[in-house]
Image 1 (cartoon, one colour):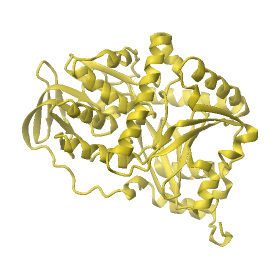
Image 2: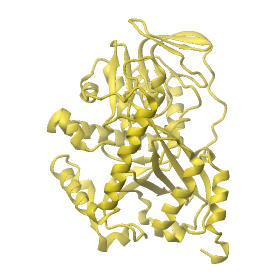
Image 3: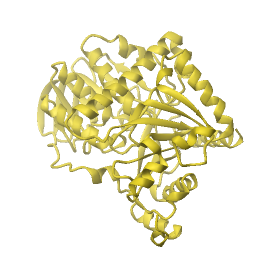
Image 4: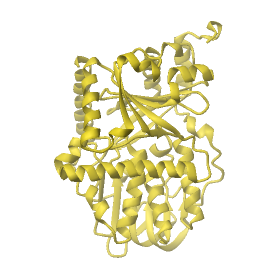
Length: 442
C-alpha cells in the first residue's frame, strides 16, 4: 500500500461508526420488487414460516417432491442471519461432536456428522447450479490462536480420521508451514479443510427463492405470521390473510420465541457483528490468505474472516450476550483485524453490520415436531449454512413419510433457557467470560 494513502486509525474508526448497519451483501445484489404480501385466504399442502436458509431449503425440497407450498416472510428474503452471515460452509455443527456422541452414541454421531457433510454438498450444488453466481470458493483454515491449542488441532484431526471418516479432506499444518496459508504471524498451527468453502450468502438465498418460485412455491414477503393455529388442520394467520395447510414448517429461528409453541425458550439470541474493508489491491488480498480460503481461529469467542470476490477483507466475531450495538463493536473488530494482519492498517472499513443468531444451550441444532403437523427447525448456533440445507431436506423427507433421518437429529434433547431474559443473558455472558479467560491461559 502507498503510505500516502494511509489514514489515522482514529479517523477510520469515526468513519466506520457512520456506516454501522450497512450490510455489504446488500450492495452486491439487485433485489428488485418485493414479493407480494399475503392478502386473503389460500390452501396449500405445507405452510413455511421464515424465508431464511432453513425455510427456503424446506420449501425448495418440498416443491421438488410435488407439494404445494406457501412461504411467509415477515421482512424480505434472507433479511436476518441467512443473508448477513460470514458465508462459510463448514463441516459438522456448532457444538463439539462429543455433545452429540453423548446423546446418540458413536454410530448416531457418525450419521449426524455425515448429514452435515451432505448439507455442505447441497449448498455447493445450489451455489453452482441455480443460475446465479454465488461466488463459491473452496477451502477453509482453522488457525490455532494459542500455543495450547496446537495439540487440540492435532487431536481433532485424529478424530476426523478415526471416528468420522473425514480425515482425507483435512491436513495439519505446523508453524513452519503456516506461511503457505496466511501472511499473519499470530498463529501457531492450522487445520486446512479442502472440502469446505465460502460464498455470498445473500446471493445464494435469492437464487434459492427464484428456484422456489419457478417450482410453484407461493412466496409472500412483508407478511408476519401472527399466530400458528395448532391441531389436525393447522393454519398460519397473518395481518391480512390466512394460509390453511396440512403441515407447517417453522423456520423462524430466534424469532420463533414470539410464538406460544412448546419449542420456545430452547433458543436465545446472540448478537454478532461483521465489518468489510474497502477493496484491497488484488495482490495484497492474495498474499494475506493465499488460495483465498475462509478462516477462523480456535478461541471460544472466535474471529472468522475471508476475502470477498471483490478483494475486501470481511471480518466477523465478538459475539455478545448482553446489549448488542454494532457501532460499539466496529473498533474492536478492526483492532483485532489489524493486529492479525498489520498490512491492513490504513485501509478503511466501508461496511459494518450486525444481527442476531439463535443458539441452544448445547450449541447442537434443535429439530422436532409439535402435534405431528408442525415441524420446527432452529438452534443453528452460528453454524447454519450447511445445517440449514440438510434441515430443509430432512423436514421434507419426514413430511413425505420418510422420517428416519429427521428423527435422528430430533432425538437430541435440549434444555430451556431461564424464562427471565436478564437472567439467561447474564448467565451466558458470565460463561463466555470464563471461556475467554481459559483461552488466554491456554
